[in-house]
Amino acid sequence: MTFDPIMIDGRHPATLEDGQLLKQCAPQFGRSSGPGGQHRNRRSTATTLVHEPTGLHGTATERRSQAQNRSVALRRLRLTLALRVRTSGPFRGPSPLWTSRRQGRQMSINPRHRDYPALLAEAMDCLLANRWDVAKSAGALGISMSQMTKLLRHHGAALEQVNQIRQDMGLPRLRR
Image (cartoon, rainbow, N blue to C red; front, side, top):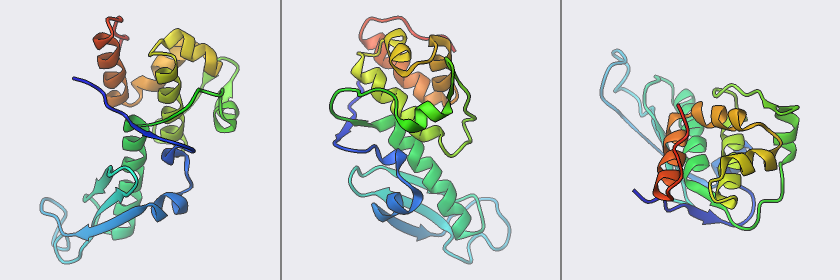
């Protein structure tokens, strides 16, 4: 399995404010099947947000409200962008957001927190810039290796992607 990142210039889309990110998206609404009660198919509440510059999308169908599904779809889109999109150019050091969330060499972040996708994207960009060397990347971001691994472990797909890339390069996998 090869990882082909979508390379972009400028600010990572996972770091944009909701309004800015939504301006880059084409919303699609529809109906969906499955559990949810008698009102599930009466309104077009299923929401898909397609990020036009990259073609990536986030979808939510589990809520009865279009606004709630849009919020969940936006969160899923941010996580997808954090995994698949990389910013070009050299890594310039931790962002102000990263620095504000870091406490010494610790990175305290709940994976459900609004900032998590942006921090994950920054960690992934740093890993790419450092050829997937976790120790070097953690040092560049000012956190410990265990904190970097913990950040990746919060989103299983991120840890699996990093492990697959590292394995393809002949590097050892990170522990779950």
